[in-house]
Amino acid sequence: MTATPDALITDPNAIAAYLAGVLALIFWLSGVPRLKKFFDVTPPVIYAYFLPTLSTAFGVTPPVSVAYDWIIRYLLPTALFLLMISVDVRSILRLGPLALFMMVSGTLGILIGGPIALLLFGPMLPPEAWKGFAALSGSWIGGTLNMVAIAESVGTPDGLLGPIIVVDTVVGYGWMAILLFLSAWQQRFDRRMRARTEVVAEANRRLAELESRRHPLDLRYAGVIIGAGFAAAGIAVAVGNWLPELGDPKIISATTWGVLLVVTAGLALSFTPVSSMEEWGASRIGYVALYLLIAAIGAKADLRAVLQAPAFLAAGVVWIAVHAAILLVAARIVRAPLFFFATGSMANIGGPASAPVVAGVYHPAMAPVGLLMAVAGYILGIYAGLVAAFVLGRIGG
Image (cartoon, rainbow, N blue to C red; front, side, top):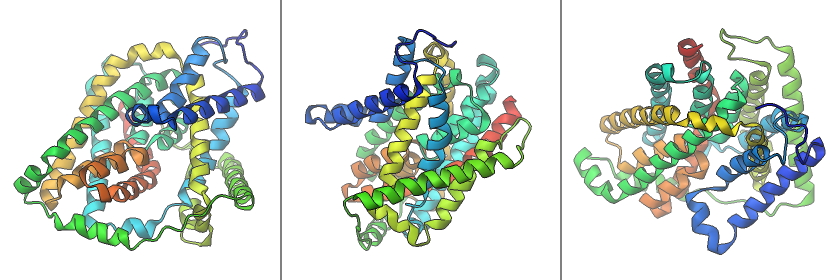
Protein backbone atom coordinates (compact mmCIF):
# COMPACT_ATOMS: atom_id res chain seq x y z
CA MET A 1 0.00 0.00 0.00
CA THR A 2 1.42 3.40 -0.93
CA ALA A 3 1.39 6.46 1.29
CA THR A 4 -1.85 8.40 1.56
CA PRO A 5 -0.92 12.10 1.83
CA ASP A 6 -4.56 13.17 2.18
CA ALA A 7 -5.31 10.90 5.16
CA LEU A 8 -7.56 12.58 7.70
CA ILE A 9 -4.97 12.24 10.48
CA THR A 10 -1.29 12.64 9.58
CA ASP A 11 0.43 14.22 12.60
CA PRO A 12 2.38 11.47 14.47
CA ASN A 13 1.15 12.64 17.87
CA ALA A 14 -2.45 12.69 16.65
CA ILE A 15 -2.06 9.21 15.15
CA ALA A 16 -0.80 7.82 18.46
CA ALA A 17 -3.70 9.52 20.27
CA TYR A 18 -6.19 8.10 17.75
CA LEU A 19 -4.88 4.54 18.20
CA ALA A 20 -5.04 4.90 21.98
CA GLY A 21 -8.64 6.15 21.65
CA VAL A 22 -9.59 3.16 19.48
CA LEU A 23 -8.20 0.82 22.14
CA ALA A 24 -10.09 2.67 24.86
CA LEU A 25 -13.34 2.20 22.93
CA ILE A 26 -12.65 -1.52 22.35
CA PHE A 27 -11.96 -2.23 26.01
CA TRP A 28 -14.91 -0.15 27.18
CA LEU A 29 -17.23 -2.11 24.89
CA SER A 30 -15.71 -5.42 26.05
CA GLY A 31 -16.87 -4.58 29.58
CA VAL A 32 -20.50 -3.92 28.61
CA PRO A 33 -22.52 -6.84 30.07
CA ARG A 34 -24.63 -7.33 26.93
CA LEU A 35 -21.47 -7.69 24.83
CA LYS A 36 -19.58 -10.04 27.15
CA LYS A 37 -20.43 -13.24 25.24
CA PHE A 38 -19.59 -11.53 21.96
CA PHE A 39 -16.12 -10.59 23.17
CA ASP A 40 -15.61 -14.05 24.68
CA VAL A 41 -15.98 -15.51 21.18
CA THR A 42 -14.06 -12.74 19.38
CA PRO A 43 -11.57 -11.27 21.87
CA PRO A 44 -10.46 -7.61 21.87
CA VAL A 45 -7.10 -8.41 20.25
CA ILE A 46 -8.87 -9.03 16.92
CA TYR A 47 -10.42 -5.56 16.91
CA ALA A 48 -7.19 -3.98 18.15
CA TYR A 49 -5.70 -5.11 14.85
CA PHE A 50 -8.52 -4.83 12.34
CA LEU A 51 -10.08 -1.50 13.34
CA PRO A 52 -6.81 0.39 12.69
CA THR A 53 -6.47 -1.61 9.45
CA LEU A 54 -9.90 -0.36 8.36
CA SER A 55 -8.97 3.16 9.46
CA THR A 56 -6.05 3.14 7.07
CA ALA A 57 -8.07 1.51 4.28
CA PHE A 58 -10.69 4.29 4.50
CA GLY A 59 -8.16 7.12 4.70
CA VAL A 60 -8.50 8.05 8.37
CA THR A 61 -4.85 7.23 9.10
CA PRO A 62 -1.88 6.86 6.72
CA PRO A 63 -0.19 3.49 6.02
CA VAL A 64 3.24 4.97 6.81
CA SER A 65 4.12 7.13 9.81
CA VAL A 66 7.00 7.65 12.21
CA ALA A 67 4.42 7.08 14.97
CA TYR A 68 4.07 3.42 13.95
CA ASP A 69 7.84 2.96 13.74
CA TRP A 70 8.40 4.41 17.21
CA ILE A 71 5.59 2.38 18.79
CA ILE A 72 6.85 -0.88 17.30
CA ARG A 73 10.51 -0.20 18.03
CA TYR A 74 10.08 0.75 21.69
CA LEU A 75 6.81 -0.74 22.93
CA LEU A 76 7.77 -4.25 21.78
CA PRO A 77 10.77 -4.55 24.16
CA THR A 78 8.87 -2.62 26.85
CA ALA A 79 5.97 -5.09 26.78
CA LEU A 80 8.33 -8.09 26.66
CA PHE A 81 10.36 -6.86 29.62
CA LEU A 82 7.33 -6.19 31.83
CA LEU A 83 5.79 -9.57 30.99
CA MET A 84 9.04 -11.49 31.54
CA ILE A 85 9.80 -10.00 34.98
CA SER A 86 6.26 -11.09 35.92
CA VAL A 87 6.88 -14.75 35.10
CA ASP A 88 6.79 -17.08 38.11
CA VAL A 89 9.07 -19.86 36.86
CA ARG A 90 8.84 -21.74 40.16
CA SER A 91 5.05 -21.95 39.85
CA ILE A 92 5.37 -23.21 36.29
CA LEU A 93 7.77 -25.93 37.41
CA ARG A 94 5.30 -26.96 40.12
CA LEU A 95 2.89 -28.04 37.38
CA GLY A 96 4.90 -31.24 37.10
CA PRO A 97 6.71 -33.01 34.26
CA LEU A 98 3.62 -34.30 32.44
CA ALA A 99 2.07 -30.85 31.98
CA LEU A 100 5.35 -29.37 30.79
CA PHE A 101 6.00 -32.34 28.50
CA MET A 102 2.65 -31.82 26.78
CA MET A 103 3.23 -28.09 26.42
CA VAL A 104 6.68 -28.64 24.88
CA SER A 105 5.25 -31.36 22.62
CA GLY A 106 2.79 -28.78 21.31
CA THR A 107 5.73 -26.46 20.60
CA LEU A 108 7.50 -29.26 18.74
CA GLY A 109 4.35 -29.76 16.66
CA ILE A 110 4.48 -26.11 15.59
CA LEU A 111 8.19 -26.34 14.76
CA ILE A 112 7.59 -29.37 12.54
CA GLY A 113 4.22 -28.38 11.09
CA GLY A 114 5.34 -25.01 9.74
CA PRO A 115 8.04 -26.31 7.37
CA ILE A 116 5.72 -29.10 6.16
CA ALA A 117 2.96 -26.58 5.37
CA LEU A 118 5.44 -24.27 3.61
CA LEU A 119 6.79 -27.12 1.48
CA LEU A 120 3.26 -28.11 0.45
CA PHE A 121 1.83 -24.65 -0.24
CA GLY A 122 4.92 -22.55 -0.94
CA PRO A 123 4.43 -22.57 -4.74
CA MET A 124 0.95 -21.02 -4.29
CA LEU A 125 2.16 -18.24 -1.98
CA PRO A 126 4.14 -14.98 -2.43
CA PRO A 127 7.97 -15.23 -2.64
CA GLU A 128 8.53 -14.02 0.91
CA ALA A 129 5.75 -16.16 2.41
CA TRP A 130 8.27 -17.81 4.72
CA LYS A 131 8.52 -14.54 6.64
CA GLY A 132 4.76 -14.64 7.21
CA PHE A 133 5.06 -18.26 8.36
CA ALA A 134 7.85 -17.24 10.73
CA ALA A 135 5.61 -14.57 12.27
CA LEU A 136 2.77 -17.09 12.61
CA SER A 137 5.10 -19.58 14.31
CA GLY A 138 5.76 -16.90 16.92
CA SER A 139 2.03 -16.43 17.48
CA TRP A 140 1.47 -20.19 17.72
CA ILE A 141 4.25 -20.61 20.26
CA GLY A 142 2.99 -18.34 23.00
CA GLY A 143 0.80 -15.62 21.54
CA THR A 144 0.54 -12.34 19.66
CA LEU A 145 3.52 -10.63 21.32
CA ASN A 146 5.82 -13.36 20.07
CA MET A 147 4.35 -12.97 16.58
CA VAL A 148 5.28 -9.28 16.58
CA ALA A 149 8.78 -10.03 17.85
CA ILE A 150 9.51 -12.64 15.18
CA ALA A 151 7.90 -10.53 12.44
CA GLU A 152 10.20 -7.64 13.33
CA SER A 153 13.19 -9.98 13.55
CA VAL A 154 12.87 -11.39 10.04
CA GLY A 155 11.39 -8.25 8.46
CA THR A 156 7.96 -9.63 7.58
CA PRO A 157 6.45 -7.27 4.97
CA ASP A 158 3.39 -5.35 6.14
CA GLY A 159 1.42 -6.82 3.25
CA LEU A 160 1.90 -10.36 4.58
CA LEU A 161 0.67 -9.58 8.08
CA GLY A 162 -2.95 -9.20 6.88
CA PRO A 163 -3.38 -12.82 5.72
CA ILE A 164 -1.31 -14.09 8.63
CA ILE A 165 -3.65 -12.42 11.12
CA VAL A 166 -6.60 -13.97 9.26
CA VAL A 167 -5.02 -17.44 9.57
CA ASP A 168 -4.16 -16.84 13.21
CA THR A 169 -7.76 -15.85 13.93
CA VAL A 170 -9.75 -18.26 11.74
CA VAL A 171 -7.62 -21.39 12.07
CA GLY A 172 -6.44 -20.71 15.62
CA TYR A 173 -9.89 -20.01 17.05
CA GLY A 174 -11.40 -22.73 14.87
CA TRP A 175 -9.05 -25.21 16.53
CA MET A 176 -10.00 -23.77 19.92
CA ALA A 177 -13.67 -24.47 19.12
CA ILE A 178 -12.81 -28.09 18.29
CA LEU A 179 -10.96 -28.49 21.58
CA LEU A 180 -13.93 -27.08 23.49
CA PHE A 181 -16.23 -29.54 21.68
CA LEU A 182 -13.94 -32.44 22.59
CA SER A 183 -14.32 -31.66 26.30
CA ALA A 184 -17.54 -33.67 26.25
CA TRP A 185 -15.48 -36.73 25.25
CA GLN A 186 -12.69 -36.48 27.79
CA GLN A 187 -13.82 -39.42 29.93
CA ARG A 188 -13.94 -41.73 26.91
CA PHE A 189 -10.57 -40.46 25.71
CA ASP A 190 -8.99 -40.92 29.13
CA ARG A 191 -10.33 -44.46 29.48
CA ARG A 192 -9.14 -45.43 26.00
CA MET A 193 -5.69 -43.98 26.62
CA ARG A 194 -5.59 -45.35 30.19
CA ALA A 195 -4.70 -41.80 31.13
CA ARG A 196 -3.08 -40.88 34.44
CA THR A 197 -5.97 -38.73 35.64
CA GLU A 198 -4.48 -38.44 39.11
CA VAL A 199 -1.94 -35.89 37.81
CA VAL A 200 -4.75 -33.39 37.21
CA ALA A 201 -5.69 -33.48 40.88
CA GLU A 202 -2.02 -33.23 41.86
CA ALA A 203 -1.47 -30.14 39.70
CA ASN A 204 -4.56 -28.58 41.25
CA ARG A 205 -3.26 -29.32 44.75
CA ARG A 206 0.07 -27.66 43.99
CA LEU A 207 -1.63 -24.60 42.58
CA ALA A 208 -3.78 -24.31 45.70
CA GLU A 209 -0.57 -23.71 47.65
CA LEU A 210 0.12 -20.52 45.71
CA GLU A 211 -1.10 -17.30 47.31
CA SER A 212 -2.34 -14.24 45.46
CA ARG A 213 -0.42 -11.15 46.52
CA ARG A 214 -1.80 -8.53 44.11
CA HIS A 215 -2.29 -4.95 45.29
CA PRO A 216 -4.20 -2.05 43.71
CA LEU A 217 -1.93 -0.08 41.39
CA ASP A 218 -0.86 3.25 42.90
CA LEU A 219 1.02 6.24 41.45
CA ARG A 220 4.39 5.32 42.93
CA TYR A 221 4.49 1.82 41.51
CA ALA A 222 2.96 2.88 38.21
CA GLY A 223 5.87 5.30 37.80
CA VAL A 224 8.42 2.65 38.72
CA ILE A 225 6.93 0.04 36.37
CA ILE A 226 6.57 2.34 33.35
CA GLY A 227 10.00 3.88 33.93
CA ALA A 228 11.70 0.50 34.29
CA GLY A 229 9.99 -0.84 31.17
CA PHE A 230 11.02 2.07 28.95
CA ALA A 231 14.54 2.19 30.41
CA ALA A 232 15.02 -1.52 29.68
CA ALA A 233 13.66 -1.02 26.15
CA GLY A 234 15.96 1.94 25.48
CA ILE A 235 19.06 0.09 26.71
CA ALA A 236 18.17 -3.05 24.74
CA VAL A 237 17.58 -1.10 21.51
CA ALA A 238 20.86 0.80 21.93
CA VAL A 239 22.91 -2.34 22.61
CA GLY A 240 21.14 -4.26 19.84
CA ASN A 241 22.24 -1.61 17.32
CA TRP A 242 25.88 -2.37 18.18
CA LEU A 243 25.62 -6.13 17.67
CA PRO A 244 26.14 -7.81 14.27
CA GLU A 245 23.23 -9.10 12.18
CA LEU A 246 23.35 -12.84 11.59
CA GLY A 247 21.88 -15.41 9.21
CA ASP A 248 21.36 -15.90 5.49
CA PRO A 249 18.55 -15.02 5.02
CA LYS A 250 18.82 -12.62 7.96
CA ILE A 251 17.27 -14.00 11.15
CA ILE A 252 19.12 -12.12 13.91
CA SER A 253 18.70 -8.39 13.26
CA ALA A 254 19.29 -5.39 15.55
CA THR A 255 15.64 -5.71 16.61
CA THR A 256 16.16 -9.40 17.38
CA TRP A 257 19.13 -8.65 19.60
CA GLY A 258 17.07 -6.09 21.48
CA VAL A 259 14.24 -8.59 21.95
CA LEU A 260 16.60 -11.35 23.12
CA LEU A 261 18.26 -8.96 25.56
CA VAL A 262 15.03 -7.79 27.23
CA VAL A 263 13.54 -11.31 27.33
CA THR A 264 16.65 -12.86 28.87
CA ALA A 265 17.20 -9.96 31.28
CA GLY A 266 13.53 -9.99 32.26
CA LEU A 267 13.59 -13.72 32.96
CA ALA A 268 16.77 -13.35 35.03
CA LEU A 269 15.20 -10.53 37.05
CA SER A 270 12.06 -12.62 37.62
CA PHE A 271 14.14 -14.57 40.18
CA THR A 272 14.98 -11.37 42.07
CA PRO A 273 12.96 -8.88 44.16
CA VAL A 274 12.28 -6.98 40.91
CA SER A 275 9.57 -9.57 40.24
CA SER A 276 7.55 -8.01 43.07
CA MET A 277 6.48 -5.36 40.55
CA GLU A 278 3.99 -7.93 39.27
CA GLU A 279 2.14 -7.62 42.59
CA TRP A 280 1.41 -4.03 41.56
CA GLY A 281 0.42 -4.72 37.96
CA ALA A 282 3.57 -4.94 35.81
CA SER A 283 2.07 -7.47 33.40
CA ARG A 284 -1.13 -5.43 33.03
CA ILE A 285 0.84 -2.39 31.93
CA GLY A 286 2.82 -4.71 29.64
CA TYR A 287 -0.42 -5.84 28.00
CA VAL A 288 -1.49 -2.22 27.44
CA ALA A 289 1.80 -1.68 25.58
CA LEU A 290 1.14 -4.89 23.62
CA TYR A 291 -2.30 -3.79 22.46
CA LEU A 292 -1.05 -0.37 21.33
CA LEU A 293 1.70 -2.22 19.47
CA ILE A 294 -0.88 -4.43 17.73
CA ALA A 295 -2.91 -1.35 16.77
CA ALA A 296 0.15 0.25 15.13
CA ILE A 297 0.85 -2.92 13.15
CA GLY A 298 -2.78 -3.07 12.06
CA ALA A 299 -2.64 0.51 10.79
CA LYS A 300 0.34 -0.40 8.58
CA ALA A 301 -1.31 -3.48 7.06
CA ASP A 302 -2.60 -3.67 3.49
CA LEU A 303 -6.22 -4.85 3.56
CA ARG A 304 -5.95 -6.10 -0.03
CA ALA A 305 -3.42 -8.72 1.11
CA VAL A 306 -6.25 -10.56 2.89
CA LEU A 307 -7.29 -11.77 -0.58
CA GLN A 308 -4.29 -14.09 -0.38
CA ALA A 309 -5.80 -15.76 2.68
CA PRO A 310 -7.29 -18.95 1.05
CA ALA A 311 -3.87 -20.49 0.33
CA PHE A 312 -2.59 -19.32 3.71
CA LEU A 313 -5.69 -20.77 5.41
CA ALA A 314 -5.12 -24.19 3.81
CA ALA A 315 -1.50 -24.10 4.96
CA GLY A 316 -2.64 -23.17 8.46
CA VAL A 317 -5.03 -26.12 8.62
CA VAL A 318 -2.23 -28.55 7.65
CA TRP A 319 0.06 -26.90 10.19
CA ILE A 320 -2.46 -27.35 13.02
CA ALA A 321 -3.11 -30.96 11.93
CA VAL A 322 0.59 -31.80 12.29
CA HIS A 323 0.67 -30.06 15.67
CA ALA A 324 -2.36 -32.07 16.84
CA ALA A 325 -0.92 -35.37 15.57
CA ILE A 326 2.35 -34.87 17.47
CA LEU A 327 0.45 -33.93 20.63
CA LEU A 328 -1.68 -37.06 20.28
CA VAL A 329 1.43 -39.25 20.01
CA ALA A 330 2.92 -37.50 23.04
CA ALA A 331 -0.29 -38.04 25.02
CA ARG A 332 -0.20 -41.72 24.10
CA ILE A 333 3.41 -42.09 25.24
CA VAL A 334 2.92 -40.53 28.69
CA ARG A 335 -0.77 -41.48 29.08
CA ALA A 336 -1.79 -37.85 29.43
CA PRO A 337 -5.46 -36.98 30.04
CA LEU A 338 -7.31 -35.09 27.31
CA PHE A 339 -7.17 -32.06 29.60
CA PHE A 340 -3.40 -31.79 29.11
CA PHE A 341 -3.69 -32.46 25.37
CA ALA A 342 -6.13 -29.55 24.99
CA THR A 343 -4.43 -27.19 27.42
CA GLY A 344 -0.95 -27.96 26.06
CA SER A 345 -2.20 -27.14 22.58
CA MET A 346 -3.89 -23.86 23.55
CA ALA A 347 -0.90 -22.81 25.65
CA ASN A 348 0.92 -22.64 22.31
CA ILE A 349 -1.75 -21.68 19.79
CA GLY A 350 -3.79 -19.26 21.87
CA GLY A 351 -1.45 -18.08 24.60
CA PRO A 352 -2.58 -16.59 27.93
CA ALA A 353 -5.87 -15.29 26.46
CA SER A 354 -7.21 -18.70 25.42
CA ALA A 355 -5.46 -21.44 27.41
CA PRO A 356 -7.22 -20.63 30.74
CA VAL A 357 -10.60 -20.67 28.94
CA VAL A 358 -10.01 -24.14 27.51
CA ALA A 359 -8.59 -25.43 30.80
CA GLY A 360 -11.61 -24.06 32.68
CA VAL A 361 -14.07 -25.83 30.36
CA TYR A 362 -12.41 -29.20 30.99
CA HIS A 363 -11.97 -28.64 34.74
CA PRO A 364 -13.40 -25.37 36.15
CA ALA A 365 -10.88 -25.19 38.99
CA MET A 366 -7.92 -25.69 36.63
CA ALA A 367 -7.97 -22.43 34.67
CA PRO A 368 -4.76 -21.28 36.45
CA VAL A 369 -2.99 -24.35 35.03
CA GLY A 370 -3.81 -23.15 31.53
CA LEU A 371 -2.49 -19.69 32.35
CA LEU A 372 0.81 -20.99 33.73
CA MET A 373 1.30 -23.33 30.76
CA ALA A 374 0.64 -20.39 28.43
CA VAL A 375 3.20 -18.25 30.27
CA ALA A 376 5.69 -21.07 29.74
CA GLY A 377 4.79 -20.80 26.06
CA TYR A 378 5.65 -17.10 26.14
CA ILE A 379 9.13 -17.97 27.41
CA LEU A 380 9.66 -20.61 24.73
CA GLY A 381 8.06 -18.49 22.04
CA ILE A 382 10.94 -16.11 21.40
CA TYR A 383 13.68 -18.72 21.35
CA ALA A 384 11.71 -21.47 19.59
CA GLY A 385 10.22 -18.92 17.20
CA LEU A 386 13.71 -17.93 16.04
CA VAL A 387 14.53 -21.59 15.46
CA ALA A 388 11.34 -21.92 13.39
CA ALA A 389 12.25 -18.74 11.47
CA PHE A 390 15.68 -20.14 10.66
CA VAL A 391 14.26 -23.43 9.34
CA LEU A 392 11.53 -21.66 7.36
CA GLY A 393 14.09 -19.25 5.94
CA ARG A 394 16.25 -22.14 4.70
CA ILE A 395 13.20 -23.62 2.95
CA GLY A 396 11.65 -20.50 1.47
CA GLY A 397 14.48 -17.94 1.51
